[in-house]
Amino acid sequence: MTQSGTVEPDKGVSAMTAALEDNLVDRIAIADVLRRRARDSGDALALVDYSVEPSVRLTFSDLNCQANRFGRVLQGQGATKGDRVVVLSSNCTDIAATMYACFKTGMVYVPLNFMMSDNDLVYVVDHCEPASAIVHPSLARRWKEIEGQLAIKPKVVVMGDVAVEGFTPLGTLAASVSDADHLDVILGDRDPVQILYTSGTTSRPKGVVNTNQNVFISSLNMALLFTLSRGDSYASPLPLFHITAQGHMLMTHQVGGMFVVSSFEAEKFARIMEDERINGVFLLPMMWKAMLELPDIATRNFSSLKRALYAMAPMAPSVMDRLHAVFGCAFNQTSGQTETNVVTKFYDGSAVEFPGANYWGVPAPIADQAVLDDDGNELMPGQVGEICWRSPSTMLTYFRNDEALREARRFGWHHSGDLGMIDSQGQLRFVDRKKDMVKSGGENVSSMRVEQVILGLPGVVAAAVVGLPHPKWEEAVTAFVRLGPGATLTAAQIMATCRTELSRFEVPKHIEIVDFMPATPTGKIKKHELRQAYADIYQDGGA
Image (cartoon, rainbow, N blue to C red; front, side):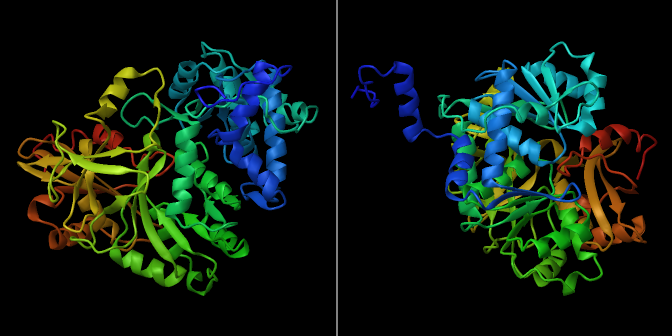
């Protein structure tokens, strides 16, 4: 044995063969999750796709074979380990198979947000310089439209068995290659496996580079946090190009469970939860509220549900009380970032100092947390500063953006850009995004605090609070509210509630009821667009 712990090859065995065999014994590779489940749970369902009719159901053996074929198609087109593969697709089983195909072959999986503007989409593709592109048939025309603007010209195939817009069908190519496992690629713990581009609400999207190590550890961490048992099922309608849905799928596959893909219509999703006997669900707060509005929601059978998750925005205590009554399970708020591979914080309902506030709870088992001031000093409980993390699930780097990496990593911590405080019970309370804190008349106003009060009103579907230029107050607290169908709530009624429940300096100077809120695919409202659109609302003195 060598000093490094690897076995010296026998005579007659090539060094490459010995290296491959040695690598297979103890590597950390997210690709091996699917291979293992195909070996030990091959007939169990891995994916159920309700985004098409009839629904598609794949076992772990099915998914593993499909991923192996897709990997060989990519290799046949000339892509090799380390090459980027972009995927432009809505949710479907092929997007999961393509992801695993990249993991298995050492290629770098780059899912594209199809809701991006053409300008951003072109930027992302050119920035990551892919060797190959896989496109959903419904988006083939979109790809064709941007193709002429691309400086990089990857080889393109379209999902399915039919040529669309002149692109070769992936299914036809896959049918002619082997579905045997890829065991001939050395996969390293710190090898990049994917690049996830952030939504870019304030700047160009940044490419978050994740490795085998941090994706693998993150998926195990989530399974531990959410107390998954062998074979548990999970469902989420969020897009698989986003870290949240992908993370929930991977954690479910770690325990040999079934992950359900579906679009979100409240009645349809409730029916899926019943029919599939779902054990865990992740929905955005607005989706949970939509479920409560179903007229027969209280009579449905959700007895299989063990845990319900939400994130992105707070939910009023009155809403939480009804959710507990209807679904009869634990509800937990999770938080994290693309840069930290989803979940680094978890609130389990423990005692807190400020009941009803937006709590992120305590760190996941694999994470450290701290609240730091601008000089990197750790603050005492009760003091507000920037929320920072350390964790082996944290990204490797930003792709080709060293400046952004330096800004995010200072004083030995990953900086989230969020403000918070640790209360007297050791629970982390989220205060606001750094850039969303409103400075009005010398007072700091948490936009999240005001939003939480407004969201507690019946009929309110979404709320966003921003600071807008004001001649007297410097920034004026301004609320934008979207109401649900049939809601008759007025701005004056919302204002009256704010005056009752908020401090005087927190009360909005103006409330605008709107029909539309610009948002990312995961429901984060693009506040910078609201600031730009309404920048002059107080130009004549305002409220």
